[in-house]
Image (cartoon, rainbow, N blue to C red; front, side, top):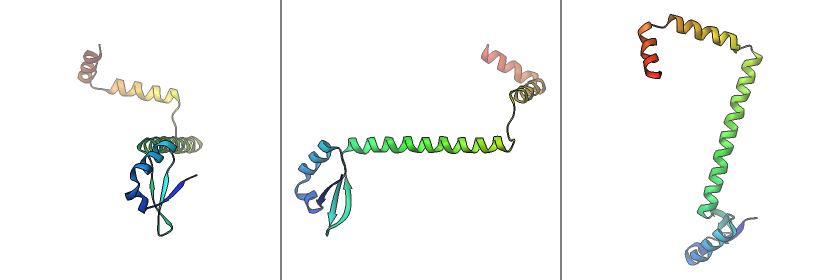
Length: 108
């Protein structure tokens, strides 16, 4: 649960609020005229929450790509291993000899 403190305490009791935020590792809600106004938290908690947010974003992107890939498969928009192998073979055969030689020298 959040700790709720009047915003006037931020100026008058900064050190105590800072200590409380670091000790409890929970956000502190500052109120103004009896209503929520700001949230204060330790930098450690902020970084932890930021990391969690980034991980969730990456997970969401992964599931989005997975969904799109499954949709492509259902629609027949994919290549089999044999098709990819044939395309690569064709590309290699039609490639310019000087380019193949440059690549061979570079990676030999």
